[in-house]
Image 1 (tube, helix red, strand yellow):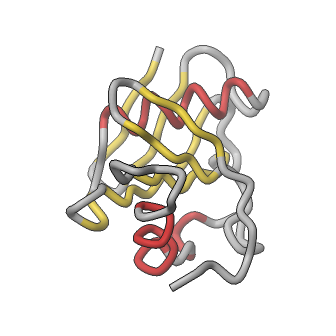
Image 2 (image 1 turned 180 degrees about the horizontal axis):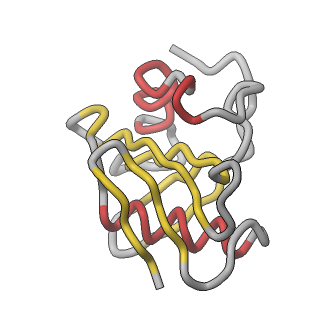
Length: 116
């Protein structure tokens, strides 16, 4: 399968290869509606990641400063409720893009994480 869009992805590592898909995912700014189960495995197996990668789908959390919402596609597993290393990578990418400050709340289905 291939993607029928070109996501603006960012690459980060916290010891594990992580692909972060910030902001708009196929025209969507709501992470809850992102096609994680469709796009996650395609990006996990992208040739740029010979050892595969985790994929974090993120967007700024509406109405909250310094917060992002994230869903996780874990390599070899599928969608999971949380990922600490992924949250760190996602917070770093969001900060680098000027979306958040240095202390970030990452909302994931498994609960909130704080990255400082």
